[in-house]
Length: 362
Image (cartoon, rainbow, N blue to C red; front, top):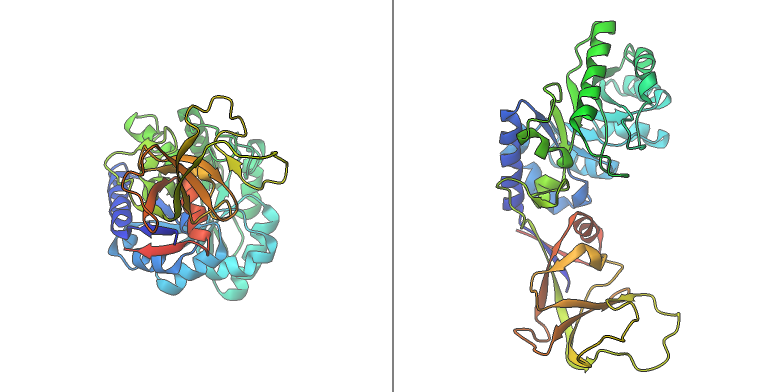
């Protein structure tokens, strides 16, 4: 059976190393767990470890996942990391101690619900800095803040922005310092002292060692680097982190020598795709060993996984089975054996979410 193996000891070590590194640079850190898709056995391993106490908070974009975290460890400070939908206001107050917001209407609804539940809900106001996703338009920041900072059951604790996710706008020094300046403007005008300037993510981490991160930026929201050990800035390993926290393996269902060129009229009824894309003009060897494994497009996008054996190359996939080419040798492979893959961020998230993929938690 296709299996995703989670090495929680390596993940915990990454979280610990990141925490120490960021603390040395006077930066607090929210661990973003949406990659784990609320998988309870994995979260139980992580949330029960003492390293979690060193974090600022644990964030997720799904309320059900935050509920699971609170059930495992009620003392964990939780953060809802996207603007809440109105229908989720009650649950946001119930399961998230902090939320990221960009709507006055929603913040007022959160205030009303927090009062009903007898809580003070903390808010980071998101500012649009060029990514064209969530955020208050920059010209309106001061007027927006003025409307929400005096609500009885809302505590505005900082400003934030999101970069690098939709259009891939880079978190440059100029972008970071603009956000820091908004914090200074608000503090000066309203006599406040906002705790957080939250403009850091996995893609921002390399700016620290390059001395390109303004001193005012003091909070990061990190998922990918903590779990995969890589930075999306350059897709390379970050410092001394482990990049082997997740291993995806699939069982070989069939292993036979077959033609590389299909036989018959090719129609439009296929639901998968192939490596050649239907072009067979330059095929050198008409036969090769072909391994069929037990996962398909319903489980993961094959473009987001990499075979660990260079001799194994992608040949084609359908909804529930995928074919890999071994060339002219079987090598070590046999029916019942396994092919191993390294999944990237999106692959890991989909595999964690797939009920057809077994999870092995170590």
